[in-house]
Length: 277
Image 1 (cartoon, helix red, strand yellow):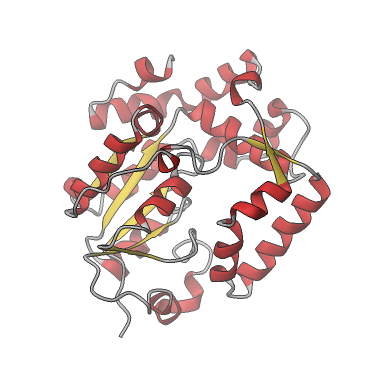
Image 2: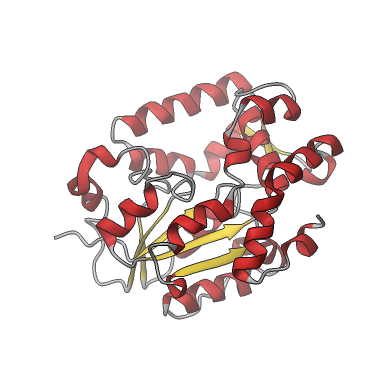
């Protein structure tokens, strides 16, 4: 009989989820699905719990069984579905400056040949760039259902500054042994990059979406995790040299100001100071 998760990373995207997945999956007391982002509680809930449980069929006696999925925080029904199906599972978020998160998401779109040519136009025509920065709204849905001690709020800033300490906080929360990181594991899992061929990268992404729709999440996960695939498709870029226009920065801050205020109030965090708002 398959075990069900007792831990979920629920979002957001572009805030260390790939690094967290690739790091925790190596821990002897943790079982994570080979593919990150099953999207069950948002996109594929109609597949039923039998399908979801089957994704964890290889879990054995690990203390932690989990899934990393970056979009559950934003779906209006995901928190209710998770609580209904999994009970008081531990959930985790990693908060990143919404400006940097939106900009990183835009760069990801562009390297796959998706979206407008400018960040300003993308902010107007791609609602998810801003919607995925509404952390407080998403967290409220979880806090309405889950005990506060079951909701672990981390900061992407801490991951960038000290990956070992960031991971220690996660493993302490999960009640498992700390996991020493080597030098390679301290690096960002998916650094900023641009496609060597936008057409090829776009075709690969569309193919991955098709495979995922046809129940091929494990295959998608294996391909996405391949260093060779990333070397062939992408080349790194200097993130510090590619920055959004200041007017676009102000647009994001204006739209999401109330979200940051709510986060600071609810969690006692000094986010404006950390993020330079």
